[in-house]
Image 1 (tube, helix red, strand yellow):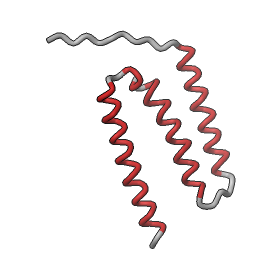
Image 2 (cartoon, rainbow, N blue to C red):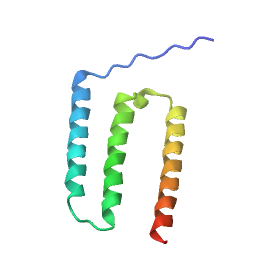
Image 3 (tube, rainbow, N blue to C red):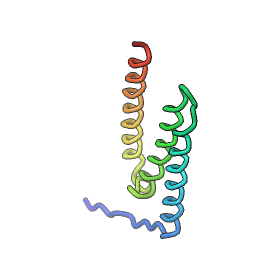
Image 4 (cartoon, rainbow, N blue to C red):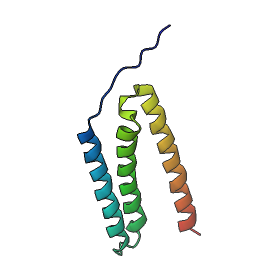
Length: 95
């Protein structure tokens, strides 16, 4: 049984755009940290971190080119992590 890995090529322009996007999101994270959003501060920071994670995983880790089953497993792991994180925040909130 032979397994051939498909060739995929992402140009340097795409990497530069993703890098610029990561810089913009990092600047947005720093800007939001200086704004008093009260209870939404952590939520906004996690949403921005989620977008950055999506960019890194899809382009730098090449998850975009993996089979659907592998991407589904990664999605399940991320959802499981989000559930644990949410339960932790709820525990802290209602102490």
